[in-house]
Length: 278
Ligand code: C2E
Ligand code: MG
Ligand code: MG
Image (cartoon, rainbow, N blue to C red; front, side):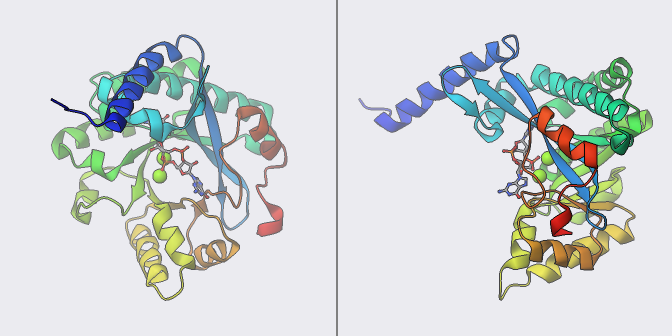
């Protein structure tokens, strides 16, 4: 009897290997946080960064989050890993703020998965990360995807309010990709909408309603007094359109890729991401 085709078998084995290796990755210092500059689209200044996890696997090379975060979520390993990312991002950002006058108000955005949001002690962990690293709470943004928010609206609303009470800001990541209705927005104390890359891609695609869609999101955010961060800006035309629409902030390869901490320092010294493109 053949249950698996060979390629399915290989994939299952790979997943088990990754799972076993991931268990040891944190203790062996194989996880690294990279930071992607987020810029004020009007001035080009770096106002914050998004913390993005990388895994430097001893034999497989660098593994990207899409290839191990789902496994970490399924096994629950995302919880200790996520707390580590949070502390590391807070520590690094507090250090940058102290070192570089141009970065004295720098903030950091950290991704929080559904599994982490469900943790009883998330609020306490965020509080102690801020306290231990000395990062002011207003300099931390927690990113949560739409899908995560609507899993248990009442419970989630309470937890988000407790996080807000610490003084942190909350962002909806990948906004517009979930199938949820917009009605949920009023239940949650959200500060920022991150416009998903797929919409930003639509800006440059000829013959589509891409521009109207992004404009509607920016307009709605303005009405709800939310700020907007456009994700995945790659082209100058996209930047020009977003600026014209009044989108506040953005990140993308046009400005900078996610970078190792040492490489981010260069941006922070001058405070400007890509003067030639603005
Ligand atoms: P995300 O939170 O939506 O992060 C943005 C992703 O878009 C990053 O991919 C970033 O490198 C990529 N990106 C930014 N600008 C551009 C661009 O101009 N062009 C293109 N093609 N891509 C761009 P990355 O680093 O591979 O991360 C993928 C996802 O993994 C993240 O999506 C996030 O959902 C998750 N992730 C990353 N780090 C963490 C973490 O520490 N914890 C959790 N729970 N999830 C994480
Ligand atoms: Mg994100
Ligand atoms: Mg995103």
